Length: 119
Length: 111
Image (tube, rainbow over all chains, first blue to last red; front, top):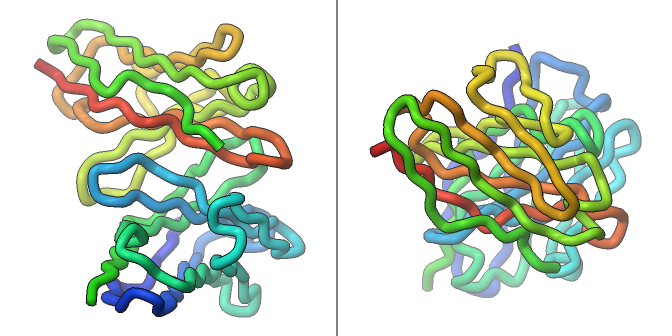
């Protein structure tokens, strides 16, 4: 069955970086986009970016462009998202999700990774 | 990049129907048939309820339906059940400049 399993919760200091992994199984990894979405406490969902199917090219939301890096390791069927220069506003649950193409919706998600930024 | 506009809350009694709107622009909702709806229960993975405006993934009850008119998409939940109480978010593809945008979210309460 399809599974996306993210790495565990993290506590980081302001200015640090965090790297979240998303290990997938049960489907052909390179056939799907992997999206990263976050939800800060009391806030809505926010799309951060994605890696494209087949070639793994990354595409980012404009507001994260200068401090996020997304990549895939096709040998491990795993996607990664690294966010740098963390501020308190980056405290959120970070989700990975897969999508077949731009119209099919994000059909499988993990339960998310809590990242807390605290001094 | 602005979020799509949803009402903050909606409610209905068991068995009733409720409709949640999602308003964007001609650059996102109005420009593509790529509207999706997601259900969020606390502590659980988000769940895709509707894609391509009005299609249901396998396993989603047919009580859930979607539609679109112009720049506004809608999710209708018919025959409300207690387990439908959750947060709902719409999403749209927005083209190359703003690929994906979510709605502001609606808390659905089953009275």
